[in-house]
Length: 165
Image (cartoon, rainbow, N blue to C red; front, side, top):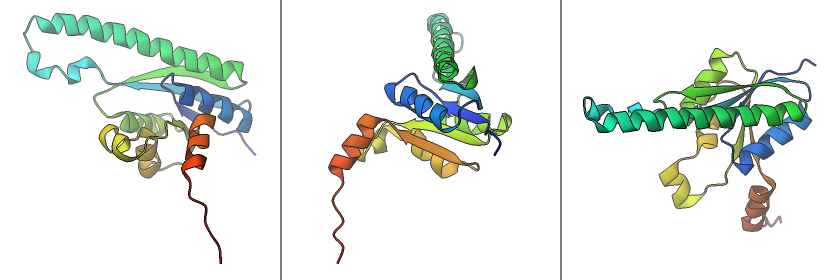
């Protein structure tokens, strides 16, 4: 069996780190791109064209891009330390995170998208959205959603036992 080309969505959270650690044991030695998706501030500031506040936002956006590059690099370093052949990538687009992930997977000809799960439910999931859920529902390639141990424990505790007859 050949090793899949992985696209690992990574935001630096403990859940994302756990996803990297888990997938590295499932597919040791695989090629991976560790993607951090960000939205540039220009998408929020289009109405400020010509305003002096735009200079401040540009400086903040450059700092945010630097932070995004650091996050992607840290994710790739973790993946390499765990045995993957990984490189970092930052997507800077006005698209949502899930759209950026799907776009990158297509452009990179990935075989598998890997993403952690925060375990959002109810109102939080409705208001904040779920990147992993959107990726899973809109992906055209296999997608692996990996809950962290903490998320898995919380879900197990909330599960109502099924009574069979």
